[in-house]
Image (cartoon, rainbow, N blue to C red; front, top):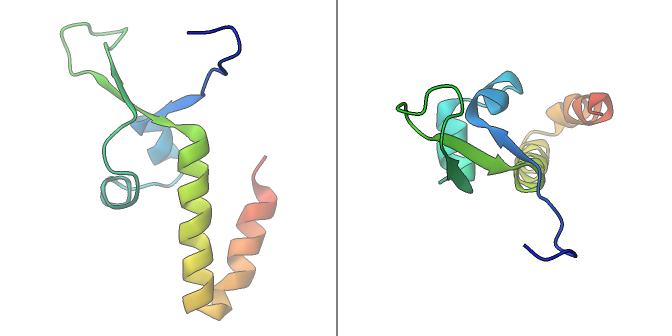
Length: 86
C-alpha cells in the first residue's frame, strides 16, 4: 500500500444488521463483500465479510432516494433519518 493511499473503513455484516440492514437487503443491494478476512476470534470459523463503508452509505442513500421518489409521503421520514445520522 502506498503512502498516499487512503485506508478505507469497512464494516462487518453484523454492523450492517445493527444499522437496520437485512440479509436480503445486503444480498440485493450490496452483493458480494468487498473483502473476506480471517475471523480474529475463531480462526477456524468462517471468514468475516467486510463491506466498504463509503459504498454502503452511497447505496443506502440511493435506495432511500428511490423510495422517497416512489412514495412521496415517505420523503419526510427519509429526511428525518438522514438528519439523525452522524
